[in-house]
Amino acid sequence: MSAQIIDGNAIAEKLRVETAAEVEAMTRAGLPRPGLATVLVGERKDSQSYVGMKRKRAGELGIESFGHTLPASASQEEIESLVKELNADARVNGILVQLPLPDHIDDEKVLNAISIEKDVDGFHPLNIGRLAQKGREPLFVPCTPDGVMYLIEQTGTPFKGANAVVLGRSNIVGMPAALLLVKRDATVTICHSRSKDLAGVCRQADILVAAVGRPEMVRGNWIKPGAVVIDVGTNAVPDPTAKKGYKWVGDVCFEEAKEVAGWITPVPGGVGPMTIAMLMRNTVRAAQYAAKKLA
Ligand code: GUN
Image 1 (tube, rainbow, N blue to C red):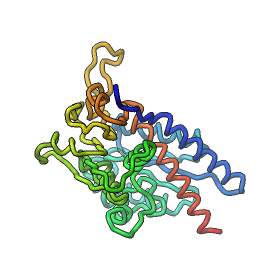
Image 2 (image 1 turned 90 degrees about the vertical axis):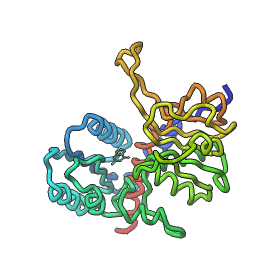
Image 3 (image 1 turned 120 degrees about the vertical axis):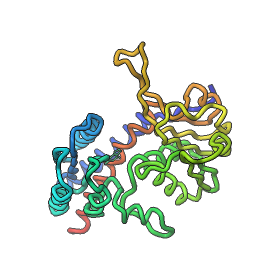
C-alpha cells in the first residue's frame, strides 16, 4: 500500500474540540450559547438519523438545539412560515432545513427564505452565488464540500495550479466543491453522467473528489500515482458476512486506489464525520457574528 490514509474521524474530533472551546469562551464572556434550529419534514429514516446526529453533536459541544418536525404533508407556506419564525428568534443562530424535502415542496423557495446570516448549511442562493463569483465571499459554504477542502488542506497538497477533477455536480456536494477548488486556484474539471472517458479525465487529477453515489465506480487504474483522493460516496451494498446484512463503500474502490494514490479517505471515517463538524463550526461563527452585530 502506498497511500497515506486521511483520518476524518481524528480531524473532525480536533475541529470539535476547537469549536467546543469557542463556545466555552463565548459563555465565559457572558454571551448566550449558540443555537441551531433543525427542520425535518416527513419521515425519511436517513434524514431522521442525520438530524438526530446533528442535534446530538450540538449538545455535546454546548450548542443549544431546537428541533422542529413537520409531517410530510406540510405545505410550502407552513415550512416557510416556520423558517421566518426562526429567522426572528434571537436564540437561533443557525437554521438547518434537512434535504431532500418532499416532492411537492419547492426547496429553492424554502432555502431562499432563510436569513443568510443564519444559513449555516450555505445553501441560500445568495451564498451559493457569492461562492461562484470572483472577488465575492459567501458568509457560509456548504458543510460537506467545506469538509472536503479541509481534508485536502491537511495533506499539505497545494491547490494552486493543481488539476482537480470533481465527479458529480450536485447542489450539495459536487458543484460547491468545484467552486471552492476554483476559488483556491485549482484547474477544475467537473464530470457527470454524460461525461466521456471518465477514466482518462480522472487519470489527469492531482486532486480527485468523487461524489456520484455509485459504489466503487472509480478503479485503481483511474488514479494518477500520488494523487489526493477524496471519496464522498456512502453507498450501502449487500454483505452477507455483516450482522446488518450490508456494508458501506465509497464511490472509489479503496482496495485498488490505495495502492496508487498518495492520500486517500476511507469510507466510513473519511468525509462523513467532517460534515457535522463543519456545521457546528458554522453555527458558532453565526453566533459570533450575531454577537458582534449587537455589540
Ligand atoms: N441532505 C444531505 N446532506 C445535507 C446537508 O449537508 N444539509 C442538509 N440540510 N441536508 C442535507
